[in-house]
Length: 467
Image (cartoon, rainbow, N blue to C red; front, top):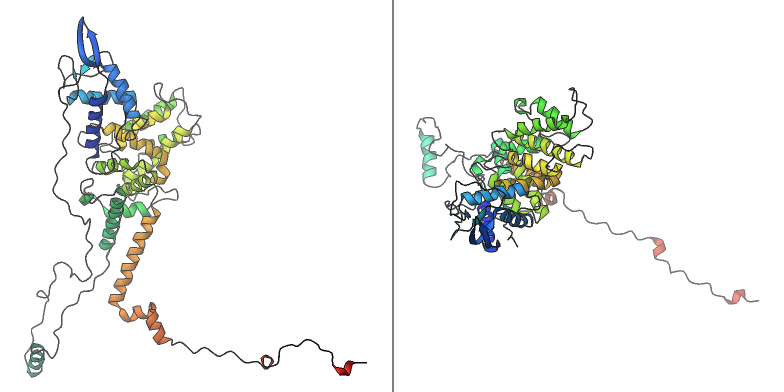
């Protein structure tokens, strides 16, 4: 049972659905079953379908071993609703699927989901304005002029311009690198880097570029604490104090210094339920609705862990600061709970790690429209986040450095165009340095007298020394 790896790109959730349906129809074992004294050919029980599909999903690199049997039952319910399967009486749609001995079969053809058609995209993500472009609303015709009193001198000047002896004056605009320009540079380079990692021709089919806020990116990069957690300017968007205290209590269990309430048996379960209820009632998932396709597309890179981490880093920079902060605090709490050996079991039916994934996956990643595999995809993403949250929720230093160097370069260009003489003095070129400081002739090495003497000769016996 091999599941083809679906890489990053548009409509990844639809591709995964169709791939799973085709594998299930092609390889699910079928045999004869008896029910109420009647024999049914080429069918299977609900429990057999759950066993086989659960094994397929767990062994698939698209979903991973964290898939639970309950999630498999939920997927089979969607299969029944979409007429991928039907019961042996031909009923589907309104029927409920349960993990039992009820008999099901495949219809003559199972419908695959079509890919939505979108208009052709442009390859350029964002076009940065050229320096020579005049600001909007300005032109040579709209330049205000004073009425000129015509005299002999003015007539001579106009005549000279007309016959070409004197060039006409034109208004020259000096582009200023404004705050809006800097924000566009951050947005453009960030999205271009994400597009390069995903290996796509355009991000338009996985991300609505118009909804990306450049101010969010800059805030998430620079407004952070020493621990790397985002600091919010608007304190009304902070987590409620009672939720933050509950999260600190479980993250530091059993040392709950901030919790002043008396503890009792099962206290930690009630605290966990309080946190889960708050996050479960959020109006929008932490990764936002409009970034759903982008995060699902990055899931196709999990086989290349380093690239996946880098892509998730950039996607998380696009989040609103309040969402990024809530995600950072939540992932830190979840990781600490899973690693805490002193933490009592928070649920009798699940292990701690599985409980964390099942409880918070939907409040982290969810689609605004109904997507049949969103629960499995969310569980896959949260599992990867828990294992790599410290790297993923960190600012990508290489991207930050490249953008800062780009902004600094454009500011130098702006300064050079505005003040060429001052720029030449402050930043001389090798040619200008050669003109200002001509190369001096190198002095000849001094000739010492001892260099003219004959080299040392060995002592030779002469006649005067003879006896």
